[in-house]
Image (cartoon, rainbow, N blue to C red; front, side, top):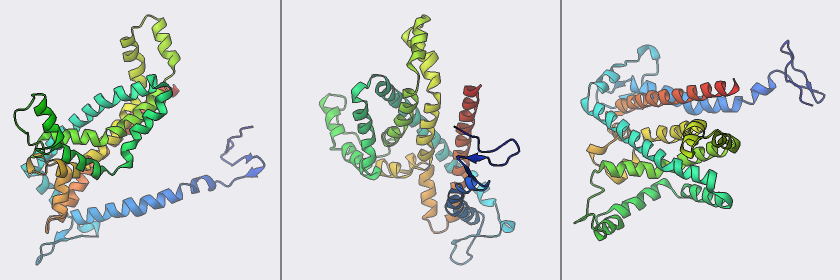
Length: 310
């Protein structure tokens, strides 16, 4: 027999003859809180101290300022005053927006097919989706480098079918190459949450829509798509957030300034002699942007949960 943990007065009730103290259940969160403090809050404070610190007058290396009372936020005004960084930020949003939209166009039909028409092959198809995770992301990008070289299979096939007259330099600063590389690297992370959301939809709802005269397309637009919204948001958050900090995809598939993204600028400043404070400041700016996206996702999920309960 299920018994509530607390009585109306807030005191713990007996559960199976055992009386639990109030501090027992919150104590389960203690390891996670300690983990967050050590591996998130402490490094975050170090990044803040470095970003708003000073430069060594002799060696011009960044010196962190550990006292918040002496923090100097001037570095942020210097960053936003640079037109080049504004262009890089706009380019990053453009690349990620296109990569996210293309990932959704590719991933949604795949997840829909597996959930609705996979049948006895559903497990096999899911294994094939997870298979890329067994290989290092770096190795998969290096395989793309081999395919996209001037004498690679991509140019050979395009020339064989007559779409190209001569080899195209796909690795010489092509925005399309960077966008497709992002899609290839992250689309499996989008398909799995979409599949989970689509697989949970009750088939009787679709049958009811058909009984009421809805066409297959109308049933999809009015029933399937709205009910899979949480899966779309979850999958989009999973792939878009790490894309903002991605720098190795651009380095491997382009490595020219005209396709550099926000993560590349962070990497450049951190590894430069006197740009460590600017790199730390860019980390904070990127963190703010990503946090806005995450808060929107959490707000949407919370709102959808409340509507479902109502």
